Length: 124
Image (cartoon, rainbow, N blue to C red; front, side):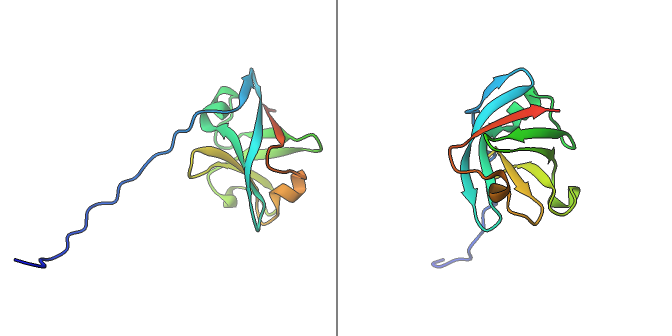
């Protein structure tokens, strides 16, 4: 039968597990900002979830993130709603890297950060 019914195949899900590009030393690490996305300045880092685990950072943990200019307390969470408005929050992005954001505020402007900037993460 020509032109038979179309059958859809189930969509495949790829789980990204990139390797870390951060230097990890005990409870701290040195990484960089890989990408910044407008309009909220979400900052995508070279850290991966395994790095956070090495630092003892899990969901709900507040950790510090420093650039050459500023240091901020950031909560590792699952959703923006896990933190108050304008608070810092970190997630694992769709590529498997740590994303730094603010709830309805611009993360990159607040950090005064640019692509390639050094980021120091430490468990408080």
